[in-house]
Every structure is written in C-alpha cells, then in structure tokens.
Length: 205
Image (cartoon, rainbow, N blue to C red):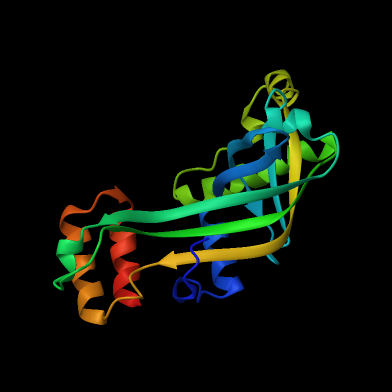
C-alpha cells in the first residue's frame, strides 16, 4: 500500500464494498527461496468481509502448496491512469499514477471438495446477475458427466480475511484546482484502465 495516509481515508466497509464489486484479483502466496506465487482469480466475498471463496486448478502451484493453511494476500485493482505533471497547471510537479487498490490479507486454506459445486454456482450467479436481462447461465445446462469431469480438475479454496487495506490515490495531496485539472487531462488523454471511473472518483474527492 502507498505510505501516504492521505490516500487511506476509505473505511473498511468502503474497501470491502469495492473488493466485492470487483470480485476479481491477484492471489499472492510466498514461496520459500523463490518469487511469490501469483494467481489471477475470481472470488466471492462474504457479506461480513471475513471470507473470500475461490477455486484453483489442481495443477496451480498454489493449490499444490496448499497442504496446510498458508499466509496469503488478495490484491484487487480498480481504475488507474498515468498523470502528466503538465495537467496540474502548477510548476515543479512530477509524473505519477492515480489508482484504486484494495488488499485482503489473511490465511488461505483448502476446502472440502464437496463444497465445490455450490461455490461454482455462487460464482456464476454473482456475475450472471450483472448481465440481466440475459437469461442467466446455470451449471444445470451442462451435461452432468462433462461438468463432473471439469470439476475434478479444480479445488475449492477459502481466504480467511484478517486485514483489509485500501489505497485510493486520486490526487488528494493536490489542491482542488490541480486535481480537477488532472482529471480533465485523464478524461481527454489518459493512459490506463477504466478512465471514466477514475475521473469520476477524482472529481468526487
């Protein structure tokens, strides 16, 4: 997380709501004497924010290492953009990057295979609901043997969340005029992802 406390004013509830709305992140687990193991995963975050349920392919190195609970972090990224110092309209500024990110830190543990079917249904329901009025896809549409074959290749996993941290770097360290001018610059020529969402957040600070 960015060290400047001005970017850490979001409440735990706001950070959890952001993570729940995204429901996709990078799962990180330490590897002894090697680079951390990373996996890009969709997840379902409980209403109280205490657990995030997900699944991994059996051949995933994280799944293979998960013979016992492991310390882990789930990094959830949001909108972001490069910020040119020319956009501020004031002298002696430097380039930076504005972004939103939330980290869920805790203990990763394997779950019984019997929980997998319900987890997969919860995941697909979460995202299919956002596609309404399209008729939701359901696992019942699949031929049972084909579904069972695919399910044998994946394992259910749960992150028990012990800490929630969020960085909302939106130019709060600049005066309003400079921040809004940077938002205008991003709107016209930003380099990043979900620029409209980032501009909206910067203008709401």
